Amino acid sequence: MKSNLTRSLEFLVHPLATTGKHMALHLVPRSLQYFEQVAQFGSIQAASREAGVSASAIHRQIKSLEDDLGKLLFDRDAKGMTLTPAGRLILDIARNWRLDSAKLWSIIQAERGIEYGNIKIAAMDGMVNGLAVNLVSELARQFPRVKAEIDIVSPDSAVKGVLNGDFEFAVAANVSPDDNLVFHWTQEFPLGCIAAPDHPIAGMTSVSLKEFISHPVVFQSSAFAIRKLLEARHEWIFESAENSVVVNSVQLMKLLAVSGQYVAVTSELDAGPELKSGKLKFIPINDKDIFKQTMSLISNAQKPVSVIGQKIIRMAVQNLRTLT
Image (cartoon, rainbow, N blue to C red; front, side, top):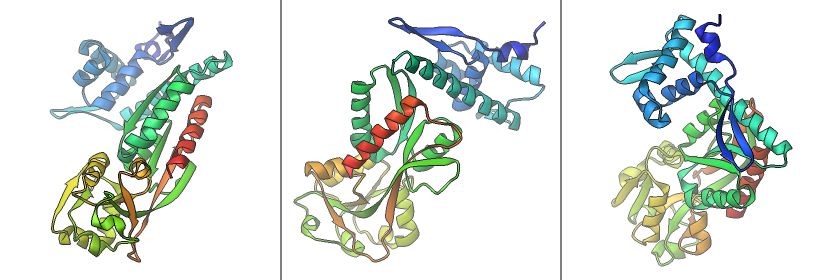
């Protein structure tokens, strides 16, 4: 007789959805699917709502895994469920199984001459109306059978997600060198002031931070890499600015600058679409110790990118080059 654990971890191949003559196969055991969702959402109830499966069914699968392993996979308290050391090991297995399953199906479909698959990408907030829009449009045109998911996250979350296998690739700011990452594209961007064309600063060839903060300013919040670097080197500007507002959205920051009421500090890549359309002007900052922002497109060196992923990466790099 098979143990519960053997039954839980054996290859369960079952159809998902059909599209024409092509049927996607799901090779990931339900127990690992449910386990990963509970780990992601922090509770069985939240995982139940996300998966559309009863909480009792998810509880049974988790309990069965714990009973057979003789280890608790989650610590449970009033705040929710957090992974134990054993749980983190199982999470690695679940993620690898899911990623390998998706890649296998993509390879099978590619051999049939069909560009098919699922791809999850991470990008920065400043790229919402630039790279993200362009990439979605190109994907729909060139790879209509590819299901893409783009998450807008912080640089730290993007790097962590790539290393964890949550994202096939990411475009992130100021990524530190890491042997576990592949850098497909990297470019430095000087920081500058962005202002509406009719703003007094817009006619200047360069501007100092002191001149910059003499106008109403919109700053990025501490969640963003540029703010962290400015705080490390030029913290005085946040204290000295007489009229300022702080936002946690690069898109909102740009809209406020376009209004003509505020100026902001960012890179040319973040403001690329507005600069090309003429809605904003970019004025270099002439302080000698001003830093540059580095943007990179990265993937996991330990998890080879799928064939379709490689094509989409090339597409993304091409798009990034047109924005710079």
